[in-house]
Structure formats: C-alpha cells, structure tokens
Length: 323
Image (cartoon, rainbow, N blue to C red; front, side, top):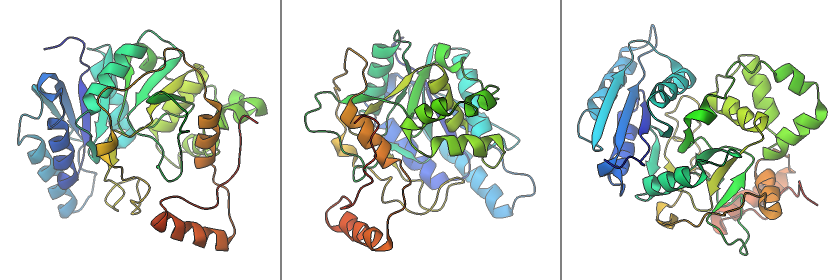
C-alpha cells in the first residue's frame, strides 16, 4: 500500500445503475489496485415509496458486488442524511484518519487517469496554503475555452468544482458550515463583488442556503475558499463524465449536453504551474461561462443551433474581470 495515495470516498443512495457504472470506471483506474475505498450509502427517506426503498436496497447490493479497490469499507446509514449531510459527515470521518481525501458521487464516471491526476495534484499542492482543493472537472467545453497559448494542464480557479474533487484535512477543518460571518460579508459590496468573480450566481446561492431553500455543502465550501483567500485547481481537460443529469438525481435536471465529457481527452501526466497565479484570459472566460445574462430570444435560438452544429455558441456574454 503506497502511503502517498489518498483514500477515495464515494457517496451512493438510490441509483444502482449509475453507482455500478461509477464503480466500474473507478476500478479501471491505474491506481485502484493500491487505493482504499470508503463507500457511504445514505438511508431511505421517511415515508418513502416501496419502489424508492427497493432502489436503496439494490444500490447497497451493487456496492458489495466486487472488491472495487485494494480495500473497500462500506457504511450504510439507517436514516436519510441527504447529500449535504452525508458528504460533510463522511468526509470529516475519513479525514479524522487521513491527511487528504478524494471524493466522488454515484453518478460520476472517471477517466482511468483520474486517481493518478488527483494524487499527483494533492501531493504537489499539499504545502501551498493558497490552494484549498483539487477539482477533477471543468466547465463545459462549449462554454469555456482555454487559450491556445496556455502552457499548463491545470489552472487556478476562483470557483471549486464539486464533480470529483479532493482536499486536505487542514483545509477542510477551516470550513465554517454555519457561515457565521455571512451577514458581515453581505454588508460589504466590495467583498460580494470579489466573491462573484467566480460566477454571478455565487452570492445568490449563498442567500438560498442562508434561507434554507437549498441544502448545499458545495456553496459553503466555495465560500470557505474565498474566506481563506484560496483557489481550487481545475484541469484543462476533464477527468469526469457526469451521467447524473438524466432526470434521476435529487439536485439535477435532465439536460446532459453541458455535463457529459469525453474521457479520452484526459491526460496521464499533467503539467502543473509552479507559481500560483490568475491567468487573465482564463478568469475572464470562466466568469463569462457562469454569467447568467439574458440574451434576446433570437440569439438564444441561434446559440442552440450553433451548439449542435459547431459545438460552441455564436453569441457570448462579454463580461471581464480583467480589462
């Protein structure tokens, strides 16, 4: 067992078909034979249907079908904790044992190079406190373009991506899940503007979380990045293919076009920048890809056709962080 390899944590609930695909892809990873895997299965909701209970039971059967990694530890909850509760509690428990962790959910298919990338990145950035997390996914290719002149295989992002990720115990322990300082943050427009450099929707998501209209661990983790003056490392080519946007997920819709990724593009030996910096072109393009600007209907129609024919929209929102 290589001591440097981070344990892998996978969260499952009631999607046996998705869970099996996720585990099969993980098992095919180059470092799976030397990795420890922790699987947390959430419990059925109270007063749920017989069909839903059956799906939970079938999912638990799937996770026990094979020895997916060198060692597998399975935890089955009797109660329904929800996605946020399961992830916060599960990751905390694993980080009570280890210094770092790699996290997946049951609808994420991984490149065979996923574990290699994650472990290399976790090792490379471990002592750099300006990095709060490692992400394995990136924005949709048709909405976000990496400049051709960019020479590295990862970039510093003001926004963490929760579809396949990793972090360290010392960073995770700094997260204030209650967001006690949120009112102070909201009272300072310059801080709100700075936070929204990662996307115009970020503060809105914080407010929804504060009002209990959503239960998102991810927006609170993103907020912790900001509060600790830290970034996430994102890959130029995704190591994740998200199959969860098919209408089966709790917090997902049924539009897969922007979430499916070609795993053959992932590379086994990524080149990391030795100096952390915000690339102006990347930050501007990233912000625009998360800017919910309304376009005229005729532009939206042309963009929809263009995405199918050209693979990218004709009209983009020209917002810039750096001028």
